Image 1: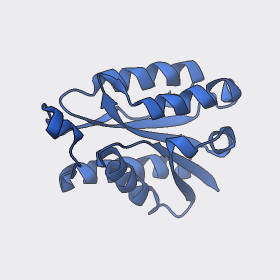
Image 2: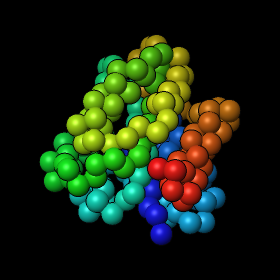
Image 3: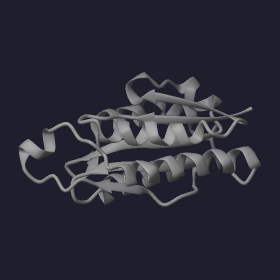
Length: 163
């Protein structure tokens, strides 16, 4: 059975909602085992046994959130040259941009020799003030559906051997 690992970090709930929606979509594929794990809890073995990855995170200060970067820092060298060619996709929860975090993930994934199989899905909430940025978020259903579709597509491609 193929395994999809969804690694996420969330500070205000948006990235977690997106990751959960993607996991729900992926779990509709019976031939793929989907594992949803907070970035702080993911270890090298989790990465090595997975056949594909979905990374979900907030963008903070134009970069990926620190605990997501910590995940990549912890697993990068132990998995280097052991995950070459595996597919991945990215979900970004952002205020008004999101491209900085997306570029950062793409650079790390290029170093790991992963294969991007979908453009980064960036969901922007428009938060601009400190209060709005720090407030708990509710992701609109239309954006959750996009995340769900991304998870489903990644799992279907993995199950069918496209990836």
